[in-house]
Amino acid sequence: MNSIIISILLLGNYYSLDNMLSKEANKSTNNEKSIIINQNNIAEEPYNIKLQIYKVKNNQYRLEVKMDLAEGSYFVSPHSKGSYKGIFNISIEGKNKLSTNGNLLEVPRSVEQIDPWKNSLASIVNENTTYKQTFTIVPQNDFEVTGLVRFVIEPRCTLEEVKFIISYYSGELKIKKTV
Image (spheres, rainbow, N blue to C red):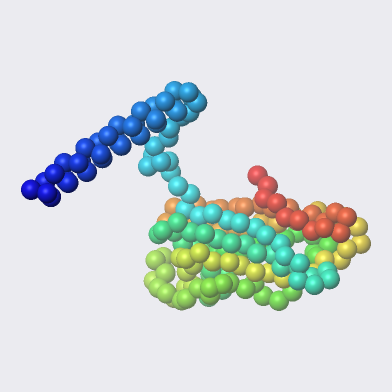
């Protein structure tokens, strides 16, 4: 008998709280003229890219490209053997202003697996991954150089190009994405 009374009280409190929250939501929507968007109807991008530069020492810096992938998205690693169109690549113009040092580091390192196109081994990136490239600048004058991250994102199968600018002004190096 006690459990029935407790259930009725809890159920009554639930509906009372739900009704109060609905009234508050309607009140704030009417007062603020806000627009509610159904998140399920918004098409998500299959990846998010973040570009950052860190100073290592003196005139040496490290470019980091962080690739966050949506579930089921993937691309071909720059460390993949074989010839693939749309392999992940970072290019920077203006070699007289800066020069890359060493190879592109991939963290975590992709693992070879059977690719879905040629049925052969390829390094496929299907998890959040950071690419690191160190470079040295020759700081004679202020400068700007352009760069590009290019890859094919799967399974959407579209060539993605993310353009960026590295600028050096008054001894400070910055990076920004461009359209």
